[in-house]
Image (tube, rainbow, N blue to C red; front, side, top):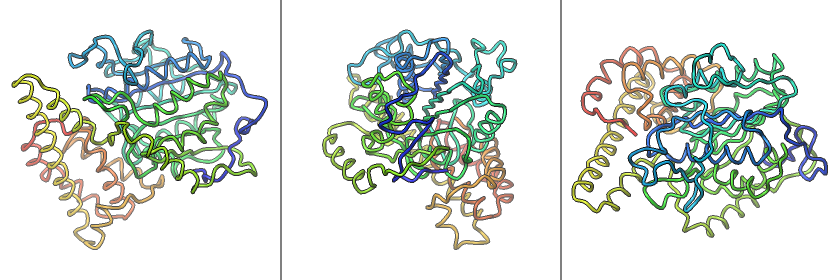
Length: 438
């Protein structure tokens, strides 16, 4: 359930301004996940490394922090400072001291769910094999940073659908595997993971970097590499300053975060009590956001969808060698061409879907229709066939087109015909470009 903005959030028996904070104890766990790979996605692993140190500062012991990240950034040949990852300009090395439990292809949606649910048998001989060992007294914090699309978040080689996450959380509650579960999601369209999906009475509190129909933004992008994400940087730096060492900081920083994040709309979802007092009215929130936007005009933001374009353009600008410049221009041209190819392909698939109902074509192409759990079997089938017959999950640019597949299901269009046509429709597009569409 999405929470109205004009409410007072009271969680775990503590409201904003309560004199009795709830301390983090040795029974708390944190699961930190960077779901991407590739140097242009530097910011996701930087966010997670930073989060590791913040969790330590908040009182969660290292043995109760589990980290999943591909770990291809710190020693990448593109990294000018091998072994160093920073989350802000001239920042400290957040990579130092981070204990990574699962690397490379072990960073998957199935492993994530097994770790979260404490399925040690399934994780045997994978990474460190560590899982969250929880009971009804355990407070769990989950932080995820990567790409997202309508009703899904992405891992290096697959994705996790909102309904699969919701079902897992529901089962965990039934088995009394947590007391309170707090989840922060840094991803485009991250609100769609919970909006009209997350059931009430789950003791789950979720905060997302963006609404269900908007992109999140990369942050600190002065050079070719974006060092962080706006939402993530804001909550991490805020918690570093507070250093409260209490569970309340996880719940009660929404008031500050929603005004300090100015390029997307931070949303909260979940199960909580609603008090009689109001948070700052929406009008005042927007006024504060606008004032911050004026102050931060010099800050370097990039729409998360466009970070690869920013990366290759900056490489061209920073090239001191003719060959480097030529390679950077070639890479940028390939990305632009690949994206145009993706746009044309999705346009053709929408045409097929709306052949019998052409008046719905504009709706499918332009609207982000609200999701509900009933459409996910149809949606999942479309995505699986698209990944099998057209372009795989590794082609990141397609994530922003996935809402069109969801729309086809919501509008009850002829998705069987779309699936049937995918092999022949996609074949010439796959032949046209061999490059990863990012």
